[in-house]
Structure formats: structure tokens, C-alpha cells
Length: 104
Image 1 (cartoon, helix red, strand yellow):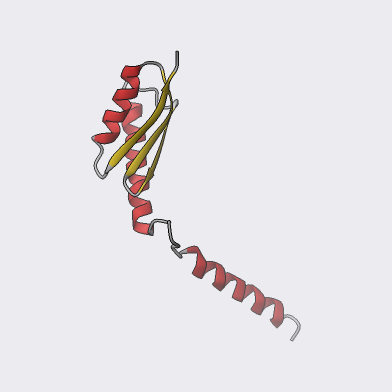
Image 2 (image 1 turned 45 degrees about the vertical axis):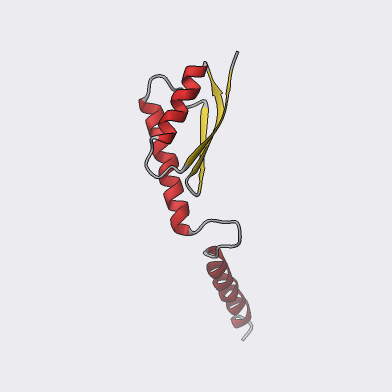
């Protein structure tokens, strides 16, 4: 009898966690949109690695609902604009916010 109570409590806690883990609240994106955004981010980062003009380790990429935010540092204005062009040309990107700072 005493062993049932902790087991029941653990089961209830597990069910609550499972149910709330998939919930989407106001301001958050759906699970499908999250997967799409992760795919866009991965694609942009891999294209940065392939491109010799962009230092992939210095530029950060975040995507939310198809809007890409670029941040970090570039060696020159050409690197900054190349990174933005790569992001804009990636499938699924709706807009790009380029917040990359050029190091003097």
C-alpha cells in the first residue's frame, strides 16, 4: 500500500511533463515551424562553412518563423554582405536581419 502512493505520484508527474512538453503557448512557434527554422539555420551554417569568404565560426545564425538573425563579427564589409546574401538565398528564408559588426 505504501509503495503505491510514490509510484502513483511519479506516474502523474510523468504524465504532466509529457503533456506540457509539447504545448505551444502564445508567442512560441509550432513544432513544425521549429523544425523548419532549425533546418534553415543548419543550411545557412553549412553554406558559411563551404564559402571561403565567410568565417563560419565568427557569425551566429538564429531563425524564428523564417526570419534569420545574423550576429557576430566580420573582418570586412564584403564578408558581412556575403553572409547576408547566403542567408537570403537559402530556401525558406522570409527575411534577414543583419546585425554583424565589422571589426576595425
